[in-house]
Length: 124
Image (tube, rainbow, N blue to C red; front, top):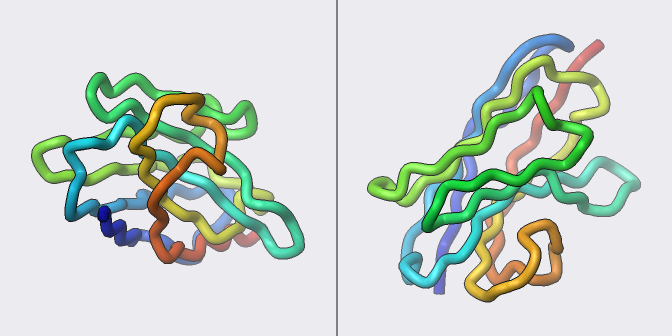
């Protein structure tokens, strides 16, 4: 089992920045990828970004490329999402997830463990 706890959400004005953190505990040594997904009201949960845990290689959704940066600190078992140039359409609950099997890091259904989510609200 892996436990994931997100932090760092909040309210920010358009153009501002936030940094989300996701602390992992438990059986983290089998992790292939960790990722961020988000769900806005009335919409389906969508992929935001992921990082290969062994190599640090990042993957991004087109909607956030160039604005968001994903990273991880293996020693601390923590993943981060630096969000810059935030837009109102970035408003959502952001979830971190861990994947302990092969396959695309962009596919939500392949993730095994999920955090409880953290709210990000961007005002215009």
